[in-house]
Length: 302
Ligand code: TA6
Image (cartoon, rainbow, N blue to C red):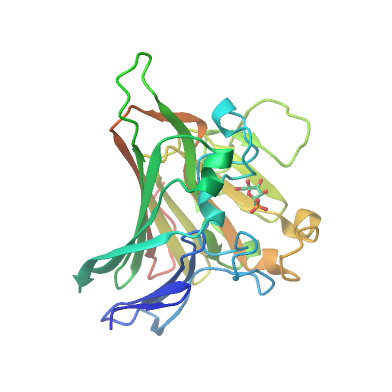
C-alpha cells in the first residue's frame, strides 16, 4: 500500500523506495527517506531529536513543523493570544484524502479547521489544508490557507497571517554552506538587543556559530550542501527564509534537544514572515516548497 494510516500517523511509500511519515499532530513530517546516486538505499533526510515528544504533548523538535498563523512571538493583534509559531504545529489535523498515487508522486492531504479550542485563542474564519507529496528524490509540502468568511462588509474581513515550513534538514552542521543569500537584508535574532537589519556579506552561509537569521525577499531557490551531499529547496509564495542552528550556546537550553543535536541538522525554513500575507473573504493562498536530493557534491553556480 503506497499510503498507510496507522493511528496517529500516515506513511507514504513511493514505488521507487523513498518513504515519508506524517503525524496527524501538527501535520508534522517526521521522516523523509530518499536515496541518491551514490547511496542506493534510501536514508533519513530530516532530523528529529531523540528527546522529541511525538505523543502530541508538545510541538515536535524536528522534522517539518508547520508554522501558522504567526512566526515567533505574535506581533499582530489577531494573534495576541497565540503561542510562539502559532497553533498549526500543535493541533491534531484530520486525514482528508489521497491526492495522487503513481510514479510521479504519492500524495496525501490533511486538513485543519477551527475547533472550540482554536477559536478560544484565534477567532478568525480559516480553513487549512496541507498536501504532502513524495517523489523518488523529492518531498513537497503545500499549505493552502482559505479565508472562509462570507461577509460582504467593508472593510473586508481579511485574514492576515504568517506561514513557514520549519525544516530540520539532517546535515553535518559544522560543514554546511547555504547559497545564495549574499547581499540579502536579514534580521539577526541571536542578539536580544535589536540592532537593525544587516546585509549578508557571505557567498556561502555557514552555521558554525549560533545562527538565527531571517532573510527578507530571498530568491526562493537555495542549496544547502556539505562534502558528499546536499538538499535543494525551492519555494513559491514564501518570500523570506530563516536559517537557524542554536549550537551548544542556545541548544543546550532546549529541553527536548538531544545532546549535541545541533551538530546534526540545519534549519532552512522558507516562509512569509516579514509582514503579513493578507487574503480577502473567499480567497485561498498557497505556499509551497520542494525539497530535492542533490546527487553529487557541487555548489550552486553563483
Ligand atoms: O525559526 C527559528 C526560530 O524561530 C528560532 O528563533 C528558534 O527559537 C526556533 O525557531 C525554535 O522555536 P521553537 O518554538 O520550536 O523552540
